[in-house]
Length: 309
Image 1 (cartoon, helix red, strand yellow):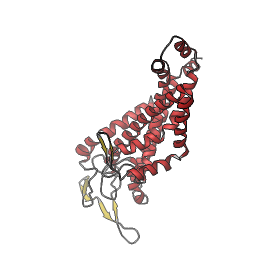
Image 2: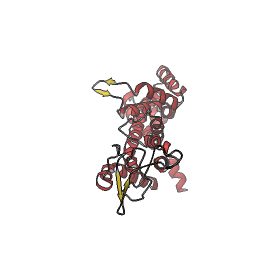
Image 3: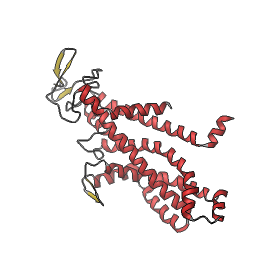
C-alpha cells in the first residue's frame, strides 16, 4: 500500500506538469532560454552565466533554488527548468513503460496460452520463435531495432508511425520482452491442462474456445496481473536507457532518460540535472516492484494460507 501511494503521488505530479509549468514556475519546459533571467527574493540574474572554471569557456546554468516558483532544481545547459522537464518527462516514461507492459503481457499471454494448450506443432513453432527473440541480448536487440526504425516512417493500416512517435519505443520495448513473460505462462498452461477441472470440462464435451476462455484464461490472468507492474518497471528502465543513448524518445519530447543525458555534461557543476531524474526513476521502479510483490501475495491463495497459520 505504501508503494501504491508513492506511485499515485508520482503519477499525479507528472499529470499536473502543465499546471506547474504554466501557473507556478511560469516557464516553457521545452523552449531554449539561454538569454533568460530569473527573479528570486527581489534579486534578478541571468539563468546562464559565463563559466569561471578552466579557460572560462561555456556557460553554467543556475543551480537549485529550492523554491517551487523559480527553478526549483535549477536549469540545464539550455536554460530550461529542470523540475518542469522532469514532470513532463515522467509523463512519457510512465506512459511508455505502462503501455508497453500491457502490450507485452497481452502478446505473451496469447502466445503462452496457445502454445501451452495446443502443444505439438503449434508449441514447437511458437517456442522456436520465442527462442529466436530470447537468443538476442535485450538491450542489443532494442538498440538495433531503435537504430533501424528511429528514422523510418512506418505505415500500419490506418496508422502512420513517424520517427518522433512514442508508439515506436512502445512497440519495440513491448515486443522484446514477450519471451520473458510467455515462457512462464506457457508452463502454467501446460500444468493446468492436466488438472481435474480441465479434464472434466473436456469429458463434458467443451470446445477448445470455451476451455481457453472459461477454464484456462481466468487461472492465467492473475499471473499476468502480477507481471504488469514488474514489466512496467523493467520497460521504464529500458526506455530510459534507450533515451539516454538518444535512440528512444526524440526531441522535442522528453523523458527521464533524455534529461539524464542532458545532465551528463553538467555533472561537475550542476549534478542535480542528472541526479534528480535518476533518483525519481529509481524510486518509481522500486515502488512498482514492491507493488508487484504485494499483488502476487494478494492473488496467491497459498500465500494467504501461510499468512493465516
